[in-house]
Amino acid sequence: MTQKYIAMYMQPEQWTDLRRYHYSNKRNNYGIGENQEIVYPALRRPYNLYAPYWIDGLTETEKENTWIQRINYDPETEEKYNRAELERLGAYKNYKWLRVPMIWAQDYGVRSSLTEE
Image 1 (tube, one colour):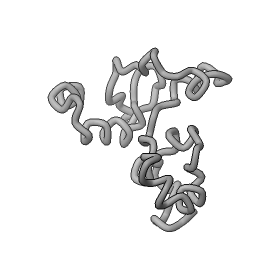
Image 2 (cartoon, rainbow, N blue to C red):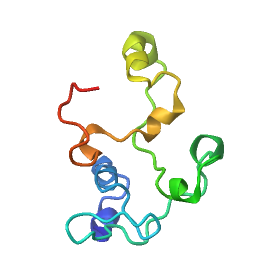
Image 3 (cartoon, rainbow, N blue to C red):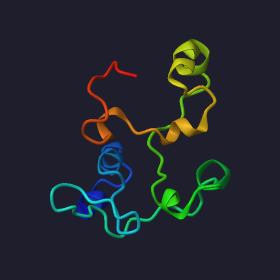
Image 4 (cartoon, rainbow, N blue to C red):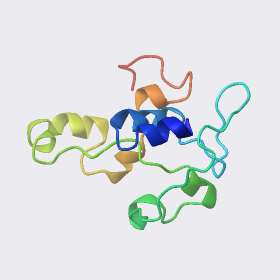
């Protein structure tokens, strides 16, 4: 996976893998599969994250497991034309929305359908 990360650097699909494997690294100790294999052993979260949004008030364990899962919605389109849906999802002007895992990246059994809340 490290070689795939290098080869696909700055490509959206590379980020999909990071999220799918829950940013598995030796610091957060999140193993994947039966053998609990660490996918990206040396991966570390960037130090330049905006602390009030990302790490202030979190325990050390929470800090190691707090990664960006989504990108912000465009305020020039989504907030103007689809605000009701953003409010329904809890995404409107909510920075914590960026931490919510995508449906396909949640642990097995967490969600059983795409329409379930």
